[in-house]
View 1: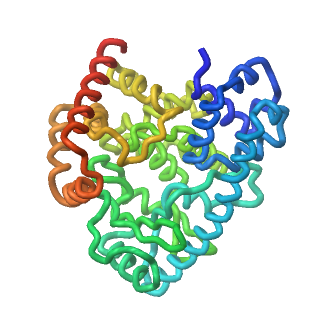
View 2: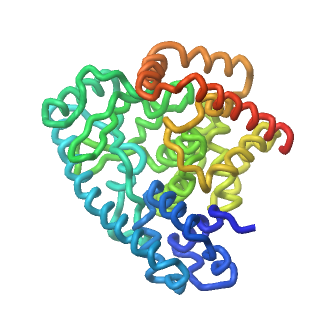
Amino acid sequence: MHSESELYRMLFSVAWKRDRIRTSQTEQSFSCTETEWNQCLEYLTKCGLAHPVLSALRRSELSQLAPRSFVDRLHTIATRNVVHDLRRRETLSRVAAVLRQIGRQGILLKGTALQVLGDPRDELPLRRAPGDIDIYLDPPFGSELRRHLLEDGFVGSASQARTAPHHLAPVLLHGVVVEIHERIMPRFWGLPERKMIAHALPVPELAALSTLSAEGLMLHAGLHASAHLFAYGLKTAWDLLWIQGRFPELDWDRLAAWVQACRLQRAFWVPIQIFSRELMLSFPQQFMRHAPADRRQQKLEAIARDRIFSALEGPFDLNPFSKTWVFLLFHESWIRQLGYLAELSRGSAAEARRNEARTHRASAPQRWRQMAETLAQWRYYQRSR
């Protein structure tokens, strides 16, 4: 049966130098309604893949299959991304200049890290469009950087509460959001952050900045997909492929050891397993032997499979009860589950939750609907998996 996710996966394969020949399978995948093409456009846009998909379609035998309106709108979005990329680069240069001024070193994370790691000699597909600029500094240097950025003309409130347990409230310049991290991810994920930071790679053209190593980028990408309940899955898959292509010397044993050091190892393996099976992403067999395969893991993979190629929700759109339920499944024991729940009520996590509640307050009827939805989801996965 045709579904939007099949179209997304087909376009992903087209963009990543594969399946550019017109076949009956691609024709079936491309035979979508206007509504489905509109949803596809939104999904690709949110994943930052407008430019890679547009470029691949134009070079393939499939360009005549996609509706003209879809291709034209994809072109408009790709052009907009190029303009925004220029603003992002200018903003990043300003951040680097402030870091040099105050004598601090920052580590770029996620899409912006991949942006500065590009090499013209690489024969890789286009990078996806990054979102925000995410940069890590050891606390309390993050607060120091934020204060200096505000003094340098960035927009934001000096007294605004943090918006997540691991990063401060964002600041903006030219419409580009900068999030300053005091941890790579919230503490309950249990990442080996000191080791990841110790292996950071310098960015030669931006002397005050580094990026995580290939292994750190891979670990963060996999866990970050689970942190957002598997939304925007093709964005993560693209990053994983791109990192492997950029760093063929990636140390898989080191990555496996870092995954094993995490408190929530399953959260990494869930998207990795799905990408391996359903997108045919290639990972070394020895590395994949570390992945769990018990009933809990199968249940988590079933939840992820229903979302990873279609979900578009941002962090504030998620049902908080469903999110908490899935995060509890990531933990290995009820003691760790209780520890996770306790951690949500103290320190930086509590500050972020209070700020979120003020900013995105849900009404009582909405909360009841969310609880009913979570109960229905729990029953469905208990019954069918």
